[in-house]
Length: 131
Image (cartoon, rainbow, N blue to C red; front, side, top):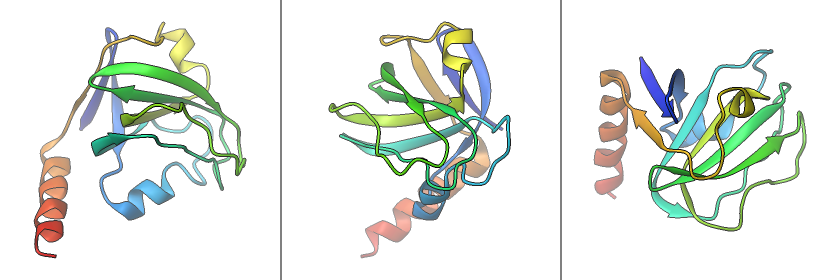
């Protein structure tokens, strides 16, 4: 089980490691959707859209283990949303969760990977290093 720690709250999370998982995200997930985390190797400006995502979301952009921005994910929208500053982790939460657990810009964040996710992450790195 993967865990995301936001402030003082621990939440189970799905983790999108592969490009396919990152593209699919929470598409077609009904309310309430699970929490999903998107860790990235390097921080860069990232924008997310809600194509085929039917549940409203809080999209939390993070860098260096701190929340930098929280934006509204509007169901089925093709508009790309996100801050104009680099992020290295993005977390999708059911709409209203960030407010409910008092997450704001500057809140601490940490992602704890399960053994299965670590194996997938390192397998991906090995494949990338061969090319």
